[in-house]
Length: 190
Image (tube, rainbow, N blue to C red; front, top):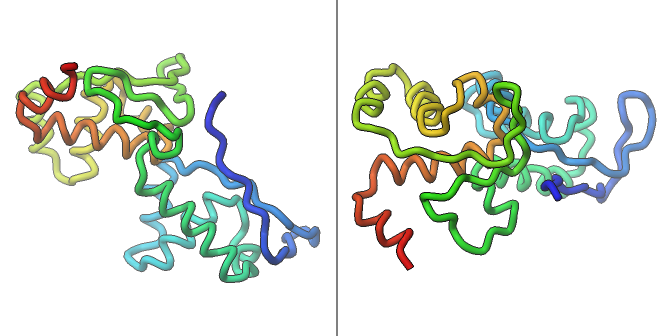
């Protein structure tokens, strides 16, 4: 069964823009492109960033979010923080790290090139790919290029990844870029 975000029962119900009472909020996954856009809108202020991400994670309007009592907002902010910083394996209760020669299991399926993917195989980048990566202007461009290269995805397909899937991929790709060969020998040998 696919992962489902948690349902948050509000400690203190709020009033929807429609006048209805909201007693619970079905939290939503954060997606890479939407998170990137929300953070750009928010600017550098951390509170503004969390507020923008909370709107994405809850589907609530700004007026509805402003009604939340602080403990409910803290719970939602904790979910946003975990969604923004934890790899997919955290949400799937993976007991052990996936060996580097195994595909990355996706938290939610990804539609790419007419296919629905539930896992992504990773290929270690060749030196020439890292040379191209280093010539790109920003860290975000470099990360997107090398992620697309290692997964076989097109850069626009990356937008459909959940943030935890993106984080999981970055951890594995970071190992490819920075660990010596012996790291992978010991990780895959039994």
